[in-house]
Image (tube, rainbow, N blue to C red; front, side, top):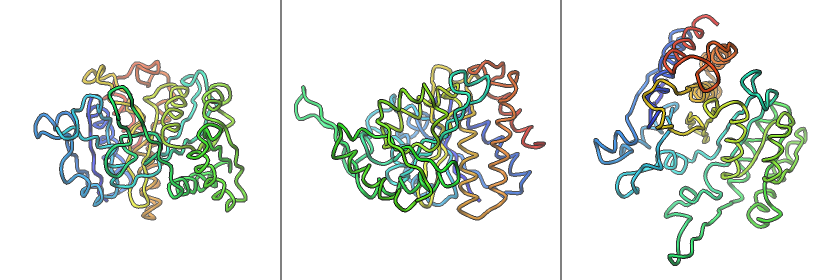
Length: 354
């Protein structure tokens, strides 16, 4: 079993180091026979090689069983023709990572505003309003004149249909409830098409309850009553915003896990950014990338019918939750005293015994 690990920028190398430590512990406990390949990317690679991304990275990603991608400082990258390639965008486009799965869980003491929240946002990942990644060639944002800027929102029936299928299949394993979030009252054509396909998919899942919520109302309802939602299905930009809101309600963006999926490959990628203001200070919370990696293990285990990978993913998740349950063993951003490395060591220790 081969994993490609890309530490990224800012706090990426620090939090990725804790993940590697935990993976090695899981490998020994569950006899996973893992081969780890760590590749430098981002600003450090740009300085050395003139590009943030190795030329063969896409092919290498296709060849392995899973990828772990650290946070990227894309706002600091030069234009792509000067080597500043957004690897997250390239992966989502070129590897067809159409589904972004983002669980948001409330925890007593940590989640002061939403302790009962337990939902998953299923976000379409390849089109929508994110203009830097919704076109196969070129960009969906342009300026006819220096005083006019236009952005294209791309919604297709095929992409809407397959992300809906992902959400409904996920709901079958949970509370059998899907909430589709849209703005079809204003975006009548694009969100109208998205909603049409969602309803067509819903007709094949008779046991799943489907509800509709406008995106502006959803932003308020996540604050008022997040515990009422289970699987939340939406388009790219809406999902990006709502999942960050839900993650913050859970206690910290540092807790937010995320998995990008295609039919053949998955990429674990924490939902937060690279936080360069705290990099190299042993302050970063690696929980998000840890839980993303646990999701990756479970995805691989399910795809490959590998029971040990499934057990390892569950063990990893339970070990993180065990450490988080003690107020003395949390990172500083959520009221604890531990630095990044000590927190990672503690999770690795728990993996051996839990």
